[in-house]
Every structure is written in structure tokens, then in C-alpha cells.
Image 1 (tube, rainbow, N blue to C red):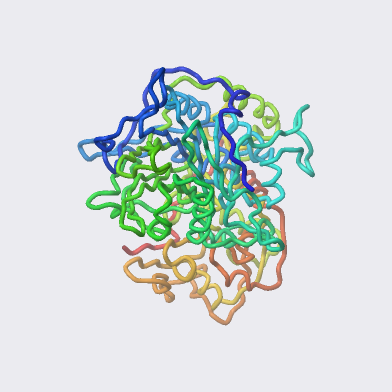
Image 2 (tube, helix red, strand yellow):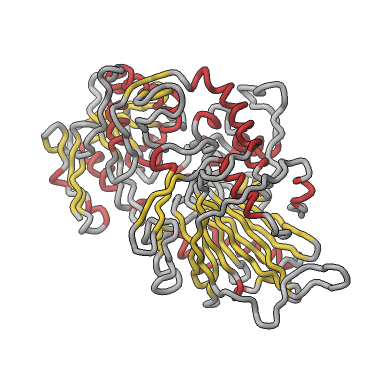
Length: 601
């Protein structure tokens, strides 16, 4: 039976709170501004018994991905909408600052919970990824995280490794780092919809209950049902992933039978707001009108017994209200990614019913600005792990003349990585014709400005690791021209219809993407060229891609049908070899033009 654990019992051995005065930037999203007129919030003081209503602070974030240090480039900024309609960017993120902001937010709030929406680890920069994300778990313990759902990236190294992060112990292959054994997470990971195929039971706790005095709130954690489609097969071997809505509704009933009426769902699945600014009002002109994506259907179908949804996965910021099946507005939030934002939600607990007074729920996203004091314990933690990582991470592997970004339908960095894999493929087999790279595998830009003492324009191994942290191998396989055409159409059809995944392509492969059309027709077949010649449907082409794509991952089943496979070294090695061979301090690589895909809008 999942445990009911008062979080503050654990907090006695955690870091003390840092006092500071700076206030976070905020955008308000509220269902209503006031409690019912009969309400009087508060707890017992002196001879007075508690009032009917008690405000509970819920702080939340998602998709940290081991970003302990401030993320570089666009990954370390958020867009802020100004009163006059213009926008500006704000530098954001870094656990030294996140810790300070969370500790400031908790000041004066005796009833405060901190929760997360998954992907705390995985696809992490070298500082955390090199050590199997133990540094991130230590940081989350210091941040006083109370509970989180699993995300898809929690399965990058498989269920056994996830269990180790939860329970502690040294890595089975790499052993312990330093003199002390890894203690594991102080907080529970929730995996209600991730079942062991043999037992049919969740691999971790499905739910957890926060309790303080007479106030108790249940949390149910799920990841997206489609996790097997976006994680390597080895990572999800022996596991089944169940429907998010059915699972949440099931455990909501379980919690209610235990007398828990206030429930929050932590869902590692998200949406896409119509605006990119973190303070975009997605409830204008109507509740939930400005958001699309999987979270909308989930929110509309999760039982009304759930009072709020903390979501993630899409790395988008939003604070929205979406009607539940009973037609009542319900808060749905996401704090972007990489620790750049946190969400502060007020849940007003009704002591008479044990439920949340929905008419009094309010929420806002706040920027993790870098103009506050750094939390000393986080600085110490980063320094400890950096000392271990520095001999590996500081090694130069190449030189660039400017920022090489990873955003856009076709990105300069996507082109660079595809070219690197094509070059490496030709080393393995001179007959290699082209390379394809999935955009989700490119985790950060390469920035010209130095992060440390390496100098501007120098690409270090640590920076390369941050870009490609998965340790996928570069695989070669044969596919027909007809299959290549089908692969390109799968970018915008099938599993990728709602959220297209545009592959990054190597030099020589060109085509037109017509966004005025629908489905597979958006890829204009007659426009597909390789080195200027039309792709021959009956010819055989040698394709380089990472092992995840070569196995049919990310909704590209046709790539999984390739033949004559040849497995090479990991993809980071391919990138390192390319940068080393094609750049120097006096002749750095310029950002590619990203002009291989012609886009019609």
C-alpha cells in the first residue's frame, strides 16, 4: 500500500531555507479571486479553532532534465509579454537560483507542497548525465521536492536504474562516486500507469498523500501512454504503459475510499499554448481556448474528483483552465522546462468537505530569474560534481564562429549533426548516401560565448554531451527509395499527425514541406531530391541514423524495416570527430544555413 508520509519529517535533515528579498516575475491565472463569503482561512491559533478554509500552496515545475547549471542560449531564456504587446527575453534557470526562488516563495506559507511533472532526469548535461543523474537527485532533495511523476526520460536507462534513483545504492557498473554511497531520492516517484508485465502492478507507487494536521491532499502520477514510442526498446522492456485518464480515474476512486477528497494529478503529458510567452493568457477569449494538444482531451476526461493537473513533456509554459467532465473549470499548468519557471498555485482546502474549493483556486507561473542570491548549498553541490567532471568535460572538441541553434523546423544544429553522421557513416561504409536525425535528440544549442575558461567559440566535450546525451549508436541500414519517401511522410502523418517531428537531414537531401496541406501530403513527393536527382522508389539507399530512429522510434516505423544493419560508435563520437576534423581555432565552423527543406506556409 502506498505510504502516507508527512514531508516535513524528511525536511529536518534537508537544507535550511535561504532568506532573500527579490520578487519573481509573475503572471496570474485565476478561476476566482476570493474565497466564498462565508470562508475564513487559517489554522488553530491560541484558543481559536481552525476556520473552514485553509489555503495550501502548491509549487510545481517539470522537465528539469538535469539542468543544474544555468542552461545556455535559448534554452536558458523565457519570453515575457509586455503590457504594450511587445515581448522581451529574460535569462532564467539554474538550480542555485531555483532553490532561492522556491525558498522565498515558501516564506510565510505553513501549508506548502512542492511537486513535479516528470523528466527530472534523462537527456541531462554532462554534469549530471555523466554520473547517471545522481547529482540531480541530490539537488532535488535539497530543493525539498515532495513528490513527482515519472516522465518518459526516467526510463532512458531502464526500470532498474529508475528504482536505484528512488531507493539509492551504487551504480551496478560504474560503482560509487566518491566515498559515500548514493542515498536515493527523499521524495517518491509516482508511476501509476507503468506496470510490470509479469505482475500487472505499478513498478513504483501509484499515488502519495500529503498530510499536515487535518489537511490531506492526494497525488496521482502518470507518464504519457506513448512512452514506448519515444524511449529505446531496452529502456521499457518488460513494462506496459496504460491510458492516462483511465489510470487517474481508477486511483482517484482508491484515494476517495481512503477518505482523501482533494486530489492533484501529476501528468507527464502536455499541450501547446497559442502564445510562446510564459505569461500568455491561454484563457482568452475563453477558458482553455488558447491551448491545444493531448493535455486538452486528458483534462476534459479526467474525473471531476481531481482538482488540478500539473503537466509537462511539451516544455511549454501555460496556466489554463479547462472544463472537467462536469463542466467545472479546472486548473492545468506547466512550467516550461530546464528549471526556468516554477508555478505557484493556491489550493483552498475546505475542512468541512475535505475537498478543494475550486472557485478559489488561483495559479501563476514565475520566472527563475538570476538576479537573486545563489543558494550556497546548490553552489557547493555543483562545485563538487564539476570537480569530478572537469577532466572529461573541459576537453576542446571543436570551434564555431557563432551560435548554432537547435530551434526551428530545420535547425542549423540539426543540419550539422546530420552532416556529422553522414561523414561518420561514410567512414564505416563509403556507400552511405544520407543521414537523418530526430529533432528531439538535439537537447541544446551550441553557443559561441564561453561557459568557462575555454574561450569564446570553443566547443568542449561537456557542451557536446549536453547536445547529444543519449549515447545512441550511429547505425547504417539499407532502405528503398519508396521507403525513404514514406519515412519523410511519417514526419507529418501517423503517430506524428498532431505534433509533426521534422527530421534533420544531411547535405544533399532536399524537399518541400507544404504546411498549407494536410497529413502526409504536406511532404511534396516530386520535390524530394538527393544530390539534385529525384529519389528513385526502386533504388536502394544507405542511410545513417541513430539507433533510436533505426529501431523505428519517434513514430518512424518504416525506418525499423531497414536491412543490412551496421552498428557504429555513439552519436557523440560522430559529432566530436566531425568538429575536430572540420574546424580549428583559426578556421571555425560557421552555422549552417538550414536551407535544405523548403517550407511553404
